[in-house]
Image 1: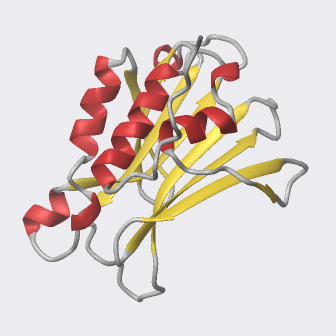
Image 2 (image 1 turned 180 degrees about the horizontal axis):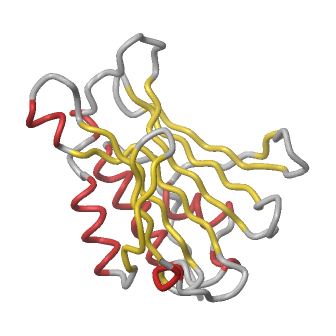
Length: 182
């Protein structure tokens, strides 16, 4: 007789949210490992279908986390490779001119996420910048992009304290050591 564990409740705070995302990332070895059902299993967030502007049906799940912040998972098939992509991001709840401080969601910060990825066997392969600075990591077919921003603009300490803003998970079609291509 096999028993299944009850579904997880959504995370109570940012640390639990990012810890669950880290566990999901650690479990990924091949594209078949990243399904909407597995995202729900690890995160406790339902991933209902939504109409997506491209030819894909995407799955999006979100949860309010604090008075100022929510988070969202977006799962979809990559338009080019048809392999699964997962996006995670913290979003501010109210449209404000200034971004609210990320203090409530920065207890599990970029340094801790970086260290967790290295313990999982990922290698830091580069850095980039889109809407915010980001670091790229790779383990076999899995590529992670970790985007970050300063906790707030109030002091030098909080400007320099990097908080996770966005995490993207992608798969390569075949193994290519992206770190060796520099």
